[in-house]
Length: 415
Image 1 (cartoon, one colour):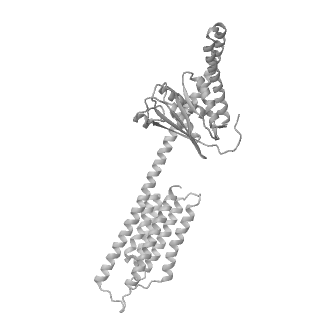
Image 2 (cartoon, rainbow, N blue to C red; image 1 turned 90 degrees about the vertical axis):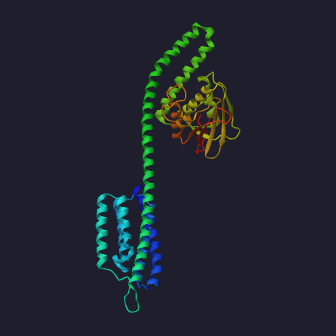
Image 3 (cartoon, rainbow, N blue to C red; image 1 turned 180 degrees about the vertical axis):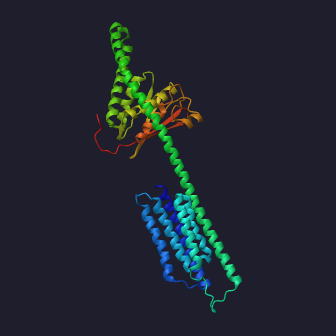
């Protein structure tokens, strides 16, 4: 809903309130003051307000944006209807004549200057015309004797009701407009923050691509050196084989990252299979880390696996492993038709209030590092409609909850 669509919605509320007050006032004033209005003209004016509100309701369900000229035309229609009603009930002498100011106030707070000036001229011209051209509010024939005091009291009462109506309408509209402005400012702030984060991610992506390209040469050299060392030092076969596997894993990740980046393809995997492969690769990278994985016993749903998602989990696993020497507890906490919740728990010191408040912000870290691991994790999960939350566990340590959407596509898992 764009800006003027919100204004048009609020205008329909104001119009409904005025229609209600006018109907109640006519029901009271006609028998009380023995008025004899033209019922056809009065009914047509009231029906025009109802039809205008119905048209506005249908217009609000359209996808086309509301332009300044259209919103101004709606205000002009209100002014014409109010003028037609005032013409039948005393014109400018009617205490409800101030209702003509409501479209002007709305125009002044929502439309450009030229529309407000035009509306001011229309309202001034109509008010001036109603001073000289109108039907009398009261019939001063012999059968209708009204004292001056009675007429003055009735006029004051009408002014009081008109004042309350104007105050209520203006207050309602201004409050709605203020809320709309606050909401728009919040949206602009969120878009500005998202734009800053996108620029930071683009910078990181550019640096990562350059670093990945530069790492290929030293990794190839390291692989050759490790091969030579295995031949020269057979007593170090176990350690050198582990290093060789780690180098191969790094090369594989670089190739896979380049492939995924160029194709943008994701793979559908059952969640338990995804975690098993991920933990095997992570154990190779972190042979000193320990974990306890509680396998899921039911039918494991499919998720969309990608290099970004794998790296997001590895970042979280590394953080948990760095927090404590005790095994990291990993479990599929909850599964339903829409999402999967996975929990990681470490037995470290937990998080301070300051850390909890700033987690996920770029370049904020709780340990030595660049301060971008958790930020990239949050961003990667958000790109796949997932999320991550961190809590202090009641029994100590940190509890990390990862939420992933279930893949809706009913297909066989990708090998």
